[in-house]
Image (cartoon, rainbow, N blue to C red):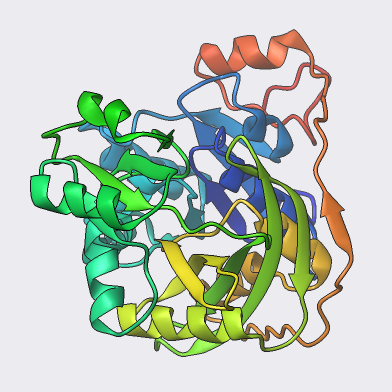
Length: 352
């Protein structure tokens, strides 16, 4: 067995997700070497081809998923399981005790109740507002009086999105109340005020220890293109955004990674429009900037010291481009046939 193979084995689920791919990139930057395995439901998922070993998995909603994960972790000697997709994280949280007992792997995930609160756009708005924190007015689309008030009090555009959403999925902008009829009466969808700003959005990555102590936080300015960050700059040291995000994480009693997103209003108010108890899609950018919260979280979950500071963060600019990787077609065929591949370290045929 090589030195890399003898390293701690980390399994990253939902490898087609951009957060999962960012986690792989961030862990490649870590001071310690990890053996990274990746799993996904689709053989075409890019993250599979970035890992040391890769294989297909059932859907997280599949009744066989917990047993599959426990057996895989035991057989593959996985030390830690990570994911960056909300549905998968919720399944990990629901079945954590069973899987950890059966496999001795650690699941890097917060508690289910907190994960659900973070996904609940209306619930988060109500919690933040009760604490006197700026959160855009939010109502469900079956709240006729609330909908009327949002249209009456705030200028267009307005935002439509799922109450329990993930990322920018289902996000729609309305420019007129006449466009609302499609969602009228739907309690699973929210209408939200849009905070106009001339400043870049702020995405703050926080890491909370298992004892719910802030280990570190860094704010990143970003410009978006189709829901994804395309221009990113980290802010060094303790900033207004990182301090406020840390306060929100503490209010939620969070453990592990937390991503808090703000829109700065012209008067300087930071409006919190999203909270995610997971790593964000900018996790690899933070690692390259000198704030590797992914590696620190891995060390924390494995019971080792994990120093993390934003004081030495590079304030350079990250610009994202489309890249292409070429792989032998046999790798995808082997995945579809149920094999385990290791595209970075395999024999010529790519099969373990």
